Amino acid sequence: MRWEMLSENRWIWLLLLVYFLSISFYSAAITCSDKRLAVKGGRRIPEKKLFCAALLGGGAAMYITMRIIHHKTLHKRFMIGLPLIILVQTALVCFILIKFVI
Image 1 (tube, rainbow, N blue to C red):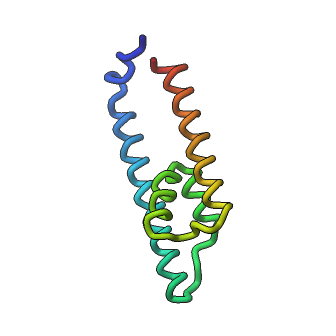
Image 2 (cartoon, helix red, strand yellow):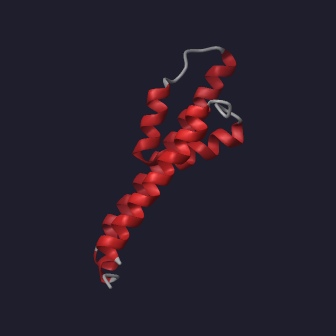
């Protein structure tokens, strides 16, 4: 097993944790902001930007936020697309962990 790799590279794991927490917070924030703009009738955040944040690692936070605040829950593009992004990202992380860490 390569568990030693986890302790040897703890700074990398810490940076990854900070990155994913940051992108998750950003994804939730722009989702809430888009909801606020939708209610007020303001200029909306483009869907491309929302999906880009999800692809960069914030998909789970965005999906959970959308479900909690009832934003874009009727849009199949988001209610199917975000879980698919999360599934692919989870599979990729599992592959990397199995192949290179465990």
